[in-house]
Image (cartoon, rainbow, N blue to C red; front, top):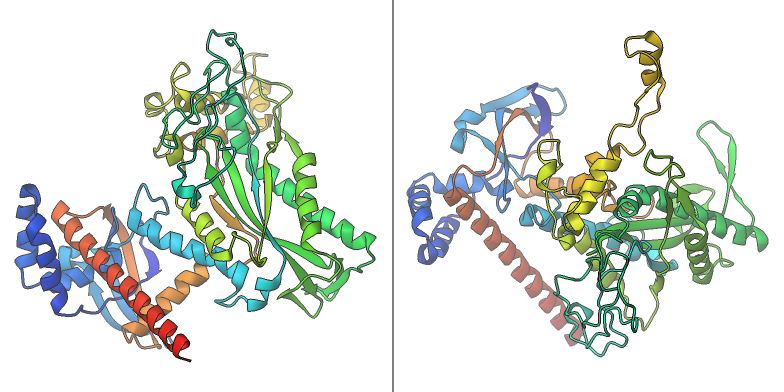
Length: 540
């Protein structure tokens, strides 16, 4: 493998008492199998240095192990000041956190990602970290776009909530699907369900009849839902721009880099979007949409929208776009007319940034950040990308709901460029294969493990808020300042992949517990600082 040039951070030594605290935390609960792995590591004189060496990956379930050379380079001259090989480091390797966003894969890295996702969402609502605080006064709505029905499924519906927290709802639900004497479906299954499902009932999201359910349409909807959202966002922008035109609000002239003037509507709609996988394995989108103005002298500045455009106009635009926008997919051998992709009837639009409402900025940001670390766990399915050798372990056309969805992805994504005319050895036949357009459904096989959904679970408009890259760069700068790394020195590593995971279960136990203790200390410190600030405010 060719070495890559990456920028790394060399850690400093931890406080001397950390070694004793970690070893004491393990002593009462050491399992017999791990005892032989933990004690030799913790009893060595190099344990403190090893603990700090693994700190960048502490808490990670499967850290990446790298090997190569680490050098300190002068930023101004490019001269190498010092050089060290990973063979001289503990375990003869360099540890790096995997960075996986999925909580089911690595809880610690997902915890970091969730914190960044919270900042990305929240800064677009309240400002901060380079975003002006004035965005907190811009009109913002929280919209939920759901998928349509592909067949009746078991669900839990509470007509009237009396609980204090929806997350721990214990209200009495209505019957699942009480349709009177509905009889049976064409396949002999009951077409009604009179059960009052609990929140943890495994039947929730499962079709009443697997044979009646349209699994093909659902995976195609998941696959093309990104295109449906793109067109919906464009329709929202056009609707708002039309309101400005009818109310006499003039367009704004922006001078481009070439010196030409480009006229554009005086209002922008910025968004932050999170995709959530429902129990029935259909995605729906939670979207924050914010109205921004356009400053001709500073096109990239975040300014309030014109006074003639309000949050009512934004709500009307969202509902109109959700009703009108559809996508007809390309032809498929199994369905020459394609599938119709449209939003479901339940499009919920709520206002935030309004006084007296229950939907606050912090609650919305925490809600969206939570779903940014999830994927298909709600459906009970979790796997890596499927291949021809592993597909039979998950796909089954006669299996349960998830198995049929995976089978639909694999079947619809099959190669379709078959030519039955002419001799296979002729040049015309070979040219016919080359001229055939790529299968627009081929990506379904690539995303079969995601039940057809191939988009990212957290996206945003460019001007909505800060980026993940900016947050990570700020964190890196803070760590360098914390370690007193000279500003004119750059740490550069020429490293290659060696493996993943801790060397032993004992190493994983020691490193992960150390990371947990550090997080707990930071949490307690933040609470103490907040309490102290509250006391000072009360005294004033």
